[in-house]
Image 1: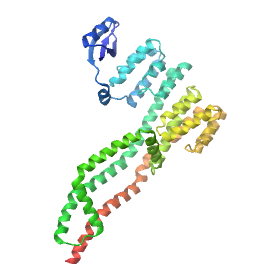
Image 2 (image 1 turned 90 degrees about the horizontal axis):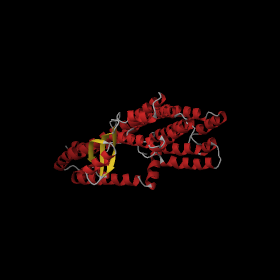
Image 3 (image 1 turned 30 degrees about the vertical axis):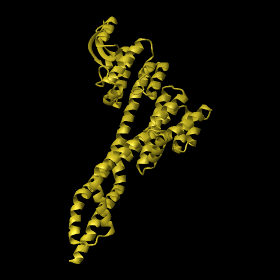
Image 4 (image 1 turned 30 degrees about the horizontal axis):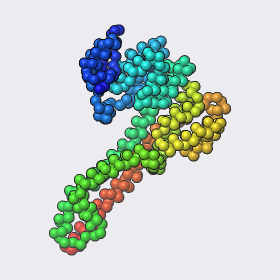
Length: 398
């Protein structure tokens, strides 16, 4: 069995970790043999269950940790002492435990980047490669501070995109909910009136009444089938074919497709600039920058660019030849190569795309409003016409 424990060592420091033992008493005995005095211990739950309830390391936790770690190291504190000071600062127990393990590994002789590499869910390739580059250049503190700034911009960018999607989602959800309520509760009452009068019903009215009757009879089954389709699509989206299909469709959505494209460019150029200024090898920069772009269509193109760079082609040429990248990126990359300031050029491009994303998100409601109004107008108009047509027929009979 695996046990989680919290204990104090001979120096009075709090230590957290896991230990394998047959029972709790054996685990405590083993820890005492290592000079640890146990204050808390509990059996680790089943992995699947614990993962379900486990609090993930969010971007805010990483930003605060990275920023403070960089400042502490810059102030003259050792990596181990800085990590010890930070491990209890986060309320996320999982992240705190990972930092504790990183402390132990660094004490044991591993480099900071190697110790962090064991936890890809908290420290991705971009993070680890940045730290590794800082270790080679002797500027870990500066790299961490720059990395914190990059994470802050990523957080801001992601928040803007998510916020922009809330408005159309709320409008469409409200429209669907209202139409379902009308079809289930109001249309059946009108049907009784039409049946009593015996007025011939137009085709559109009969279709709406049929849809209403269908929803009344099979509403629960529709929900079950809908949930099943949703789950099936979610699993299909995790397959290679599914990812390619959905990511391709994502780029073709009116208005939102353009927002996604600019978001990918902002993340790619900013990561490229950050890793380039850290002194990372060019191929590693391309590979790490690929991972921040979460669209597989773009990732495939970046893989092709990486192979071309590996074969000796220049950065500017591979960027110009890529159909998914705006031509300005290739042109400005040429300027960066000639001046030797490619990191500054890419940083300027990242700032440009950040502003583009901000402009789109700020104006998204204005851009989508006509489309949403048309959808709402058509939906509500169909219901109104289907109800009014037989009423006009009733008036003519009278």
